[in-house]
Image 1: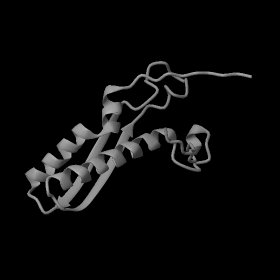
Image 2 (image 1 turned 180 degrees about the horizontal axis):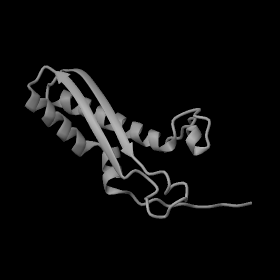
Image 3 (image 1 turned 90 degrees about the vertical axis):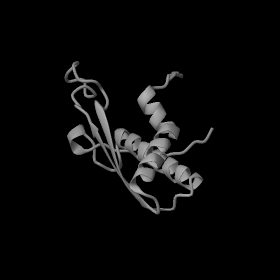
Length: 125
């Protein structure tokens, strides 16, 4: 198992100082990075030379749920949108196929769209 550390923050509206991405933004980044990496792998396996891959991810969230202000909205994203701009030495149809195959192979996409059991342990002294 690999361990790493990073800085996270929250915007002022969520009582933070905006010193870094918030956890939900990290999730969007992980999804973008995994999908992009998968696109590169799939393209290479199909002899498609990519010129560029750009992504824009958006997450719709009603923060009242996470803040405990309202029990109606869920705590996390209600919807995530992913938009890619992909260019390379293949026709549009082939580039779209590369993205679709990459979606099917992306581990983070799988975890986000299908969920994964999470076990939480608590130790106290």
